[in-house]
View 1: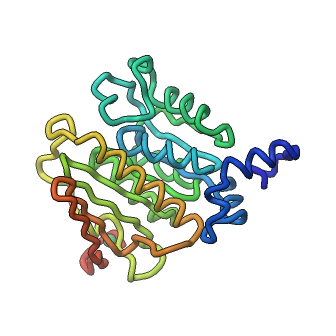
View 2 (view 1 turned 60 degrees about the vertical axis):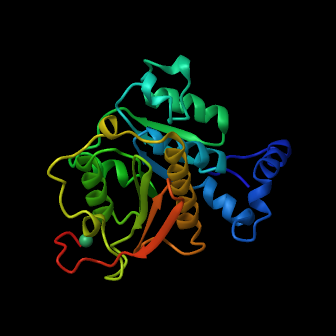
Amino acid sequence: MSNSGAVCSPVAITAKLRRYARHLVLPEIGEAGQTKLLASSVLVIGAGGLGSAALAYMSASGIGRLGIVEHDRVELSNLQRQILFECSDVGRAKTEAARDRIEEINDDCLVELFQYKLTPDNARDLIKRFDIVVDGSDNFDTRFAVADACLKEQKPLISAAISGFSAQLSTFKPYLSAAHPCYRCLVPEKPEREITCEQEGIVGPLAGIMGSYQALEVIKELLGIGESLSGFLLVIDALTQTTRKSALPRDPSCSHC
Ligand SMILES: [Zn+2]
């Protein structure tokens, strides 16, 4: 088992077998699946609450290359839910703090940093270099730019959003067939008044749950195992512990897909 064709010594191979032992024993992953994960790449939009958890689990799981698009710095109010960062990171660029933490989690993982805002102008160039995209952004302008670029570049998009104690999750692969909706089928237009997480709050662990869900769906999509969430929407109410998975059909009037 090797990452990107690198030659591994017997000692390094033994270490890899031990590191990923709980994956290797799973019939759905095994050595072939782990080798595929090590050769895979994922672009994460935003190193916030969702991105932190998704990046932590994807790096630990042995995704070989992770790209991080993030222009912010770590603030004290981030530490309540953004588990990649610690007190000493406050004031640092989130990209650099995230890379340092990921390298401590797993040195099999190559990290690429993009310390700027994703826009409709740069989105396609960024996204085309990765196998799959995780959207952990917190605003509709970015979500639309990511979704439109993923559709054009034919990349699977794992999208999650949180508000207070509620969250939703879906996968978008509208380029496959008319059975698969795009993000704009779910959210056709930006809401008239966009409320930020600063205004409405987020319960910390829910960010970790949803980011972990995103990492899990990435592994499933990369390996083609289980049932894809494309065409479905998972809605979670953390206060009542209700999880509802419902069909999300394509909107016949959607002008994007
Ligand atoms: Zn659509």
